[in-house]
Image (cartoon, rainbow over all chains, first blue to last red; front, side, top):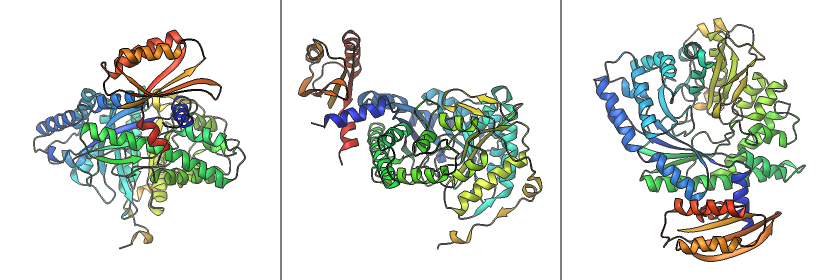
Length: 452
Length: 89
C-alpha cells in the first residue's frame, strides 16, 4: 500500500496549500475553417469548436472528482484567427470574436484564446484587420482572449507593431472604461510566443500543432512556499533542491491529469506547462515564496536572484516529471493576481522598474499591471519594446499585459474581481518615449540568434 | 479502479463501522486498512476496489458526504494513481 505519510502529504498540498491543476486547455486547429464567405467560415469555426470540445468540461469534472484534485479552468485555444479570417472578404473581424465567444459559452469553457496575429516580421492583410478589430472584439465579447506576437529572437522586433499595440491597448481600455479597462486583461503582447501555451490570456494553437491537442497547466505556489517553510534558514543548495522536489511532485500530478484527459477525450497529449501561477487567494502567491527565502518584501534587492533560482528550480524539477514540457513553464509574476505582489506594491517595495528586471528571469513578463489612464500610447509601446528586447536578446518568452485604467491615478486601486484580482495603479516614467516609438521599422535580430 | 479513502478528524466510536457499512452496501471491496494518529489527526486510510461497485462514484461520494457530517470527520475518495504518480518514480 502507498505510504500513509505520502497520502497525507498529497492531501495537505491540495487542501491547505492550494495545489491545483490550473487549466486543461484543448488546442483546436481551425485551418480547415477558411472560407471566402465570412458567414460560412464562422459557422465552420463554431461547429468545429463545439464538436471537438463537446466533452471537455465534463471530462475535466470527472477527473476532478475521481482524483480529488481541483481542476480550476477548462479552456480552448485555436489557430490565430487572422490566418483563418483572411480568406474571407470580411473587413471587420469582430464577428469572428463573437463566434468564438458563442462557442466558448456553448462548450462551457471560461476562456477561449486565439483571437491572435503573429506579426513579428510584418503584417498580412488579415493581421492588419485583426489587430484593428481587437479593441471592439474585447469590448463586446466576454470570454475571448487576444494576443499578438510582435518579436522573436530569430527576426527581431517589429516596431511598427509595437507602436500600434500601444494604441490598441489604449483604445481597448477606453472602450471598456465602464469596467476599469478590463478588456486589456484579455490582451497579451508577446515576444517569442510559445505555440502550445495553455494559460490565458496568451494561449493560441500554433501552426505547427496537430489537429487537436490537450495541454495542461499546473500550479502550486502555496505548496512550494510551504516546502520552503520547512527548511527555514538552510543554504541555497537546499532551497533549490526543495523547490525541485516540490515541482517534480506537482508536475507528476499534471502529467497524470493530462494523460487521463487525453485518453478520455481521445485527443493526443501535447505538453504540461509547469508554471507556478498565483491566484489572489491567500497562500497562493509567488511573492510569498520570494519572501520566504529571506526578503523582507518582494521587490527588495535580492528579488531578481530569488526569482531566478525559483524559476530555474521549477523547470529542473518539472522537466523530469513529464513526458513533454512546454508552454511558458516557470514562475508567473502577475501583479493583480498575486496577494504578495499587491502588498509589495502598496507598501512601496515593488515598482515597475524592479518588475522589468524580474521579467529577465521569470517565465513571462509584465503581467496584469495597472497604470494611470492618461499614460500616452507611446509610453505603453516603449514598455512593450523594452520587454521585447529582454525576450529577444535572452531567447525567452516575454509578454506585456498592461491596463491603463481610465480615470485612475497612481495610488488608486482597481478591482477586477475573480482570478484577475485587484491592482494598485503603478507609476510609469513621466519622460516621453514619443520620438523613439515614432521611428517605426524593425529592430534587427541579435547576432547570437544566427545559429544555422 | 482502485481508490484510496482517507478519513481525517477527531477520533470517535463508529467511524470504521459507519464507513465500511456504506462501502458494503455499495459493493466496494476493502483491500487494506490502516489507522494512525498522523500530525495530530486521527487518520484512517483504506485501499478499496471499486470495480464491482453498484453505484456511480458521485453517488458513493454523496453517501460519504452525509456520513462526513454525522461523524464530524473529513472523508475523501481518490483514485490511487494520484498518490502513485506523485510519490513513486
